Length: 154
Length: 246
Length: 50
Image 1 (cartoon, each protein chain N blue to C red):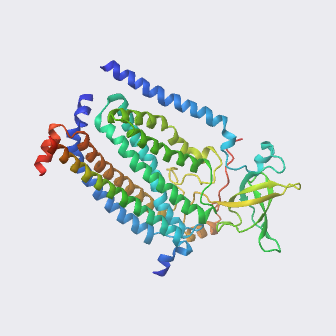
Image 2 (cartoon, rainbow over the protein chains, first blue to last red; image 1 turned 180 degrees about the vertical axis):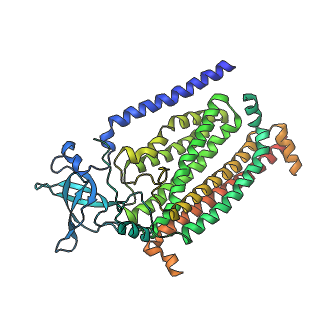
Image 3 (cartoon, chains in turn cyan, orange, green; image 1 turned 90 degrees about the vertical axis):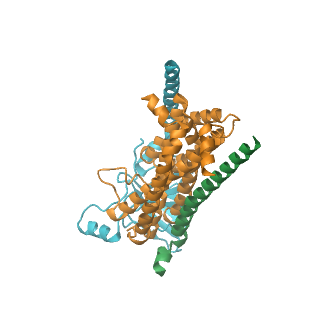
């Protein structure tokens, strides 16, 4: 009886570890495809060609947002604190879009190296606090909580 | 030790001791839910970035945590089922799956309602959202397998194997926001040294999370007890029990 | 009070989430209660056949 239970125990352990190993291998192999976006400094290594549709994520550089005369086109610069990419977008921006905010844009690079976005999504960070606390933090000169899009995968 | 475990988990004993557990977890759920709702809707501040939508967090995050917690409870029952063939554990698998699926769906839909105003999209195929959707399909698969056999015990074993295989998805959901670039933000609370939420928001979140867990156990016991009566209907203890209540 | 229902302009999203949550909590409870009733009835019928 005890040996039967032992056999089942081994079966469960083999099942779990076998499946975990297979999944880990698969995820590792498809790692690139699991990235939701590239950051500006990853662009060079990513080998992205002109007219290829991809997503770009980063922080909107403070003071870089320019509204075009047509009223609905916006230009701004996107950074991950290492690289910069200029972005142009025509359309309504999400409520959270502002300078210093993390965003993810989908679009293509044009001939001048300007990223022409078809869609802009705001990426908020994991910090939650009342406005007064955020003000106090800012006033104290402490680091204002901004999300720096991670670039863990090289 | 295992003889003790067998006795403790014998259907008759389980039915007896789970009655008070069901009662107390129900009471706890009602109390915590009342306090949690008071804090999350009336006595917590708006967020400096997200304004009033931060209140969605107090139901979205507990639902998402419960979707994974419920899976871990189901996985424990599955392992016990596969190794020790304990009847109560077999019943737990199917019941966990129904509750877990409903909370996974809730987490996904409240997430969509939060994503639209803040991100600008209801749905994106990033690693976090996709792996949580896979969790919903795993729950559906377990529910389907539990009922797919004429022999309930064979169904439970098939469902247990799928559950055990699917465990691998849980760390993927949790770490998806750290392993890959995602639109979904990183973890707020699991950084125990310094959670990134202000205490005035962390407290309602944690109270609601506990309320959801208490509700889960209350419901799990309620469902499992009913199911147990059905499967044990031909035993003398069920017949005696039902005679008494008549 | 109006502010409370207005939710800073996000009333649909915030109240939608709380409404759905209430719906899931209640529906789970109602289904479980109905299932228990049906099971007890079923056992009763089976025992009467004997």
